[in-house]
Length: 160
Length: 160
Length: 160
Length: 160
Image (cartoon, rainbow over all chains, first blue to last red; front, side, top):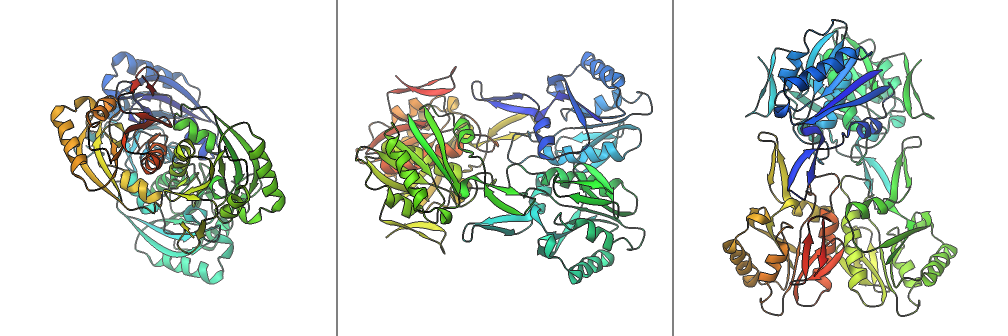
C-alpha cells in the first residue's frame, strides 16, 4: 500500500474565470493513477490546499503528524514547489523506517502540457525503490532532503 | 546520460483516417521528456517501428546489439506489450554493469487518457535507482526479466 | 432544443489493447458539450456504432426514420466520413422544415490532437444558422447534401 | 479568406511557475486551426495581449482601425470575456459589408478541458454563415453586439 497526501501547490491548480485566477482545486491524482492502471494499492488524503508560500509552521506540523501517524511505510506528498525543500527538511527526523517522497509540478496537471504525470510516475517508482529517508523527486532526479533547492530563475530543482 | 531506444508498440501509435487504422508513428518521447523538464541528459534512437507481435529473431538480435554496443550504462527501451517479456529475456545475458528497463503503454501516448506518460516517468526513476539487470516496468511495478508475463485478459503485467 | 444522433465512425473510436485495434466506443459528445458550457438545450441518442463503410441500407433506413420522427427541427448526426455523403443524400427528402447537419472527424475525439471538437462547434453553429436542408460540415466548410465527396487521398471533403 | 485578430484574454493564457501566475502567451489558434484541418484560407494577426479588463480606449481604437482597414470581409476577433460586449459595441459602426465575430473562452485553450476549441469552431461557422454585422459567439449561441452581457456569476453570456 502506498499512501499519498496532498497539500496543494501548482499541480492541482484550476482556473477560475470569475476572478481570472488560478487556485488549488480537487486533486487530479486519483484520475491520473486510474489512467495509469496501477496495480499496487494506494490511498490518498488531502491535508490542505495551499500555495506552498502560504504554508506556515502549523501546516507543516500538521503534515508531519499525518505522515508520522500513518500505518504505511511508503508515503508520497504532493506539494507546491517554492517551499518543498523546507517541508522536506521538516520531515527529516521521522522514524527511520519510512520512505517519504515529495513532488509537485511546474505546470498544473490540468494543462495539456505539464510535468505532473511524468513526475507522478517518477515519484511512484522512487518511493518503491528507495531506502528509508526523505526525498524530493523533480526534473527526473532524486534529491535528498536538506541538500536540494529550487532554482527559481532556471525553473528547476538542483543540489546544494 | 540515459540512452533510450524505441522499437514501436502501442505507445507510439497514430491513427490513419485513410485506411481507418492505426500504425506506429514518430515517437512522442522527445516531446514528453521536454514537457517533463528533465535535467539529466538523454539521447533517443529509433531501432524499429513494429507491433511487438511482428518482432522476429532478427529484430531482437538488432535490439540486443544496439543495447550491448551503446556506451551508456542506463538504457530504456520502449516496446509493444505483447512480447515485451520475450525481448526482456533475450537481453538477460548482456554484460552485468548495465541497467536495462523496458516499458510500453496500453493506450497510445497520443490519446488524451493514456498510461504512457506515467510509465515514462516510472521507467526514468527505475533506470536511475535499480542495480544492474534487465527489468520491465508496467502498471506501477518493477518486474525482473524472466519472471513476468502480460495477462492479456486483465490488461496488466504480473509476476510468474 | 438541438437533437443529436450518433452512428459511430472515427470520432468515437477507442483503442483496445487486447486486440491492438480501434473500435467505436461510447460517444464523447456529452462530455465535450459539457466542457463547451453550451446554453442551448440538447439531447443525444445513439442509433448505432459502426464504421461508415459497414453501414447498410437497413442502417440508413433506421437513421432516416429516427430523424424524420424526432420532434426537433434542428438535428445533428455524427457519422463516419467514408460514406457520410451517401447518408446525407439518403436524408434529402425528409420534410422541408428540418435543418440536418452531418459531421464526423478524421481523428478520434479521444486523441490529444483531433478535429473532433472544432467540428462539433462548427456543426452546432451551422445547425443554428442554416435554413432547412441537409448539410455536411467538415474542414471548416458547409456542403449541401448531393454536392460533396470525401477526397480520400487529400483527407478532406470537397464540392462535386 | 478569413481574417483573425487576437487581443489576449483567458483563451491564450499560460501559467508561469516563477511567479505562480498566468498571463497571456502566444496564441494557440494557429495550432488549433491546423489540427482542425480547415480548408478555407485564414490569416492571423496579434493586436495586443491583454486581459480584457485592461483594455482601454486606445486599445479599442487600435482594434477598430485594424478591423476597418483589413481587406477581408469575414473577421474573427479573440478577446477576453469581461469586456467583450464593450468592444463589440465599439465596432458596431464599421462599414456594413463586414461580418465580425468576437469570441473567447472561460478556460485557457492550453487546459485539457476548455471551451476554446469548440468556441473556435462555432465562430468559424458563424462568420461564414452570418450576414454583415457585429456578433459575439459564446456558449453555443450567437449574440448581436449591443444586446449581450456576460453574467459573471453564472459564467456565461446572455441576451439583454
